[in-house]
Image (tube, rainbow, N blue to C red):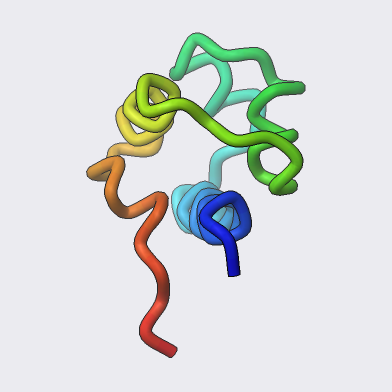
Length: 71
């Protein structure tokens, strides 16, 4: 599984756990909702800067977004 896919899965899970919409994440991160959706679908790669913004918006360490599950 590539990191885009890992990030997409983790981002969606974390967002759902916090009952947030993509629009809310976009607003808190300063990104467009379309871009947030593209990341969440694994269509684009996020830069390290964007990773940090998304981590802040979701209230998690950015590393949580790219951590592979041990399952």
